[in-house]
Length: 169
Image (cartoon, rainbow, N blue to C red; front, side, top):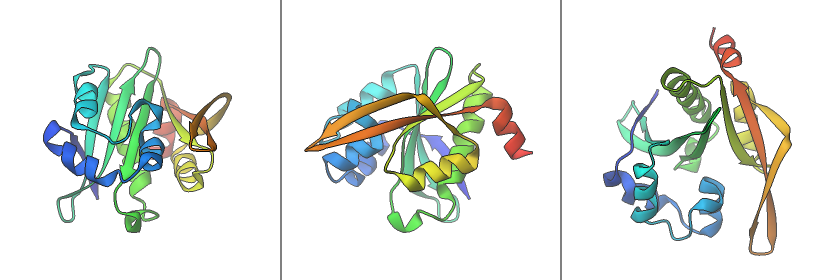
């Protein structure tokens, strides 16, 4: 069982310690942050009234197991910067539960009927997780990020509030 709790600057060192290199940061946060991740970068997000930052708590042992954010856009809200620290916890349903909690929070707190996220096309596990929650790929939106000699293609996925509510019923 997981719970989303407000992320504060006190939580920053824990998150920063989980980002080991530039590729990990790009995968986690997209191109906005710059390696190494710093408290100042996180403080900027905390000060942004359109961003809501969460720490992900495992209620079985009350430990922080990850991080996530919601970014309020004009007509949608964007889920992002989602990270489950321990790779051993991946594939155990945490991702799906986190997505459901983020969507529940977003649809309950913001006057939006659509949620979206961006994910790199090579991240098959995440894409599969998002599809299980009800997200579909928007073929008209793609972005690229360059890291070292690689080009990473970012896909955009969306879910309508009605779809989410039907999935939960």
